[in-house]
Image 1 (cartoon, rainbow, N blue to C red):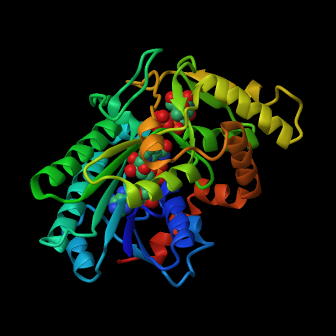
Image 2 (image 1 turned 90 degrees about the vertical axis):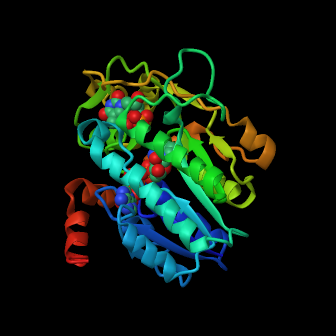
Image 3 (image 1 turned 30 degrees about the vertical axis):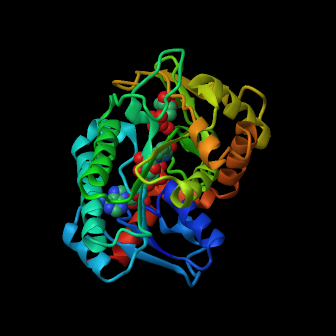
Length: 349
Ligand code: NAD
Ligand code: TYD
């Protein structure tokens, strides 16, 4: 198979690319990425020289570029992860989220539809989405695949819209699509503006840990490698037109998670217990902050046999170890050095 992965230089995408290259050495993987601030080819250094891997720099908002890319390649499948992904950025720049997440997805759907027209046999368009489309839960209950959409942030509204377009292309044109909605991911190569890598980096530099509101919001955390494994299973075995929820059965209030992280960091950095916790600073809450996300992933377990491979405590410990042994990566992405490098490398392209 020749698979087009979009957003493969980002956090989850780089794990998906790595997983597919190792698990399916007979596949060709083309990684299409715009290399925004969140896209970093250093995330794929260990696999970039593999003979079945190709990188293409491009923007999914550019329909003509996509048409040419599909005309020049015979893709059997698309795994679509490219998106603007940070809720706080969506609050300050909502239009960018509409462009990449909505228009970009429609362009990609259209390019696949035109390229595969009349021959959908063996083809698959996999759209990677988020549990945030379902809105927020109270203290009880979980999101299932039939929970009504109720997005609250510009990010989740743009992802919800893209999900609707994916289903519309299935229902209208018969495009063989599959969708998954996953909970919060954590692990290596996550851009340090998201909670866990941001706090690891701030603790390292003795900087304040900004906890939004009272820290009572609940997230359901999943190790990114387990998400990549789930994407593999759903891409290959999921039923066409179906949606699968992916989650870790692993709910934490932000403040409990932050205390656990602080304890691990004190131990790893040989600091007095309580040193990291003293950096906790309560700040104004995020506007429209969803209280609680929790995923019921029983359909995925029942129908396709997927379950998470490690516990959160193991995964968080391994994640801290990774960031502490890859401080150069952290320093480069926080200094913006890698972005300047790519701007020069791809100048005029
Ligand atoms: P990320 O921000 O780390 O990576 C996104 C990638 O997409 C980057 O490499 C970026 O350069 C690329 N990109 C952005 N706009 C583009 C465009 N117009 N054209 C081409 N490439 C573009 O995001 P992530 O956390 O890896 O998330 C990947 C996907 O998974 C997203 O669709 C997101 O909605 C979804 N998701 C994320 C989480 C999570 O916890 N991070 C959870 C569930 C679902
Ligand atoms: P984040 O990693 O941005 O993911 P999402 O908003 O998509 O769930 O945030 C996870 C939780 O942590 C969320 O409830 C917001 C909170 N948070 C903070 O309290 N402080 C921070 O500095 C950040 C980035 C997030």
